[in-house]
Every structure is written in structure tokens, then in C-alpha cells.
Image (cartoon, rainbow, N blue to C red; front, side, top):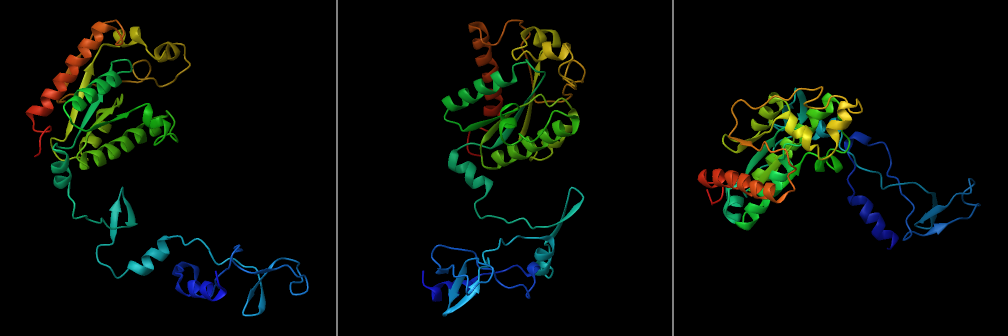
Amino acid sequence: MAIAAVARCVGRCYVSPAFGESEPFRLSERRFLKFSSSTNSDPAGSRSLIFGGKSHRRLSFFRPIMATDESISSRSSDCVGETKQINGKQKNIVWHDCPVTKSDRQELIKQKGCVIWITGLSGSGKSSLACALSRALHNRGKLSYILDGDNVRHGLNSDLSFEAEDRAENIRRVGEVAKLFADAGIICIASLISPYRRERAACRALLPEGDFIEVFMDVPLHVCEARDPKGLYKRARAGKIKGFTGVDDPYEPPLDCEMVIQNNRDEGLSSSSSSSSLCEMAEIVVSYLDQNGYLKTP
């Protein structure tokens, strides 16, 4: 690239006011610029740039432009409605509306977005039901997505531990993501232990009334512990896992959920008899969705 072209590019670059007007542009070493390594023109022995026949010390002009509270405020202080309180903290943000609405998206895929929140003890069959339900919806030509409690910890929530505060944050994040899926018109199936009513209620409050469908897997502790598909109860009883729901941490069953599903058999959910019961349970949820208008254009 010609030096003149580079100079024109420099003239068009924007630098945040946060860096101050007195700080010069800094030019980084680029292969398309002409270099000189002559120690005569540069006593320090470092490479130089040649602009207009003159040698200049190598500087960096491609400095990252970062948005800071100060720089945002300086540009938007005269804009009404820019400041909003979120979680008790003042943020310089404003919601940006899009002309394509939730109704438009729902009409496009011929279904209504919602969140099916499957809660219950470890080993109660939440993930198995979620997969069976997703398959049943797929067979009907309906789009769904599963947010599994373990799966989200591989990516979205990989930074969270199993301490009380992080477990609460885990639920909050899944609730927010599930809300986005529902807003896109997708039937989002969230499968998590989510042991506390308060946290489940907070996720419910994120969505319009009726769009949060709570499904309680009502399976006794002794049945879940007998199944123990991941060996977690055994480890918890041995003291290797602390704060495990059902062992040394409570589970608060829903008081007013949309559906209660019982599966009190002691055998694992992978047997042929259990597979048929999973299909039956999935059909219960599908029937609810169908009766309440979620499987057709609203």
C-alpha cells in the first residue's frame, strides 16, 4: 500500500475521546510499510518508518479503541433515555428495537416460542424426558432446543463452580438464554435440577405470562438414588461431593407448576419398558403445548 494511502487511512481513523486529543497516533509495524534498520538514523538501533523521505521512530497507531464509561458518557450525555438501572447499577445502555418482531418469527416457523422448564432431583429423568420431547416435537415438524444442566457447563457456564452463589448464577444464565430462544420462536427445553423455588420463579418472571411451562419430575429420592446413573449419590454419601441436592442440600418441589410427571420405577431409563414410558411422558407435554396453541401460528 502506498504511503499516501496509509496517511489517508490515518486521517479517517477514529480515536475515542477517552484517550485525549494530545496523545499522538501510533503506527505499528506493518509489512506494507517501508522499513529502514539503519542505526545512523535511529541511535537506538530499532527499525524506522520512512514517510515523505524522513525517518521516524517506529510507533504504533493501531491502538485498540475501547469503550469506557467515560467515553460513552461523553458522547451520550445529551441523549435522553440512555441511562438505565440494571440490577441496581447504572448502565449507559439503551434497548435497540428491531422491526422484525417475535410474532414475525413465530409466523415464519409456524409455532409459538416458549420455555419448558424440567426440574427434579438428579436421576429423576429430566434429560431423558427432554430428549424424548425434542424428538416428539421434531417428528411433528416443530423446532426445539435443549439447554441441559450439564451441557451448558461445558461452555456457557464453564467458569462456574458448584458453590451456592455459582449454582444460582448458573440458573440465572440459563433462564436468560432460554428467554432468548423463546423470543426467537423456538420451543426451548431447559433441563436442570434448579432446586429452589425462588430461582425458578425468577426465570418464570423473565417471560410473558404462560410462556414458562414448569414440568416437575416427581420421583422419590430413593428411586433416584437407586438409579444413580452418574454415580453422584454414591460419591455424595461418601462425602466426596458437598452440597448435593437431596443428600445434604434441600430440593424444594414446585407448589403450582403446569405439569407433574411421575416415574417411580426403580429400573434405569434406558430399558425398553422405560423407553415407552418416556414417549408417553413426552406426549403428555406435547399435548399440553398443542392444547395451548404453541404448536401453531399464534
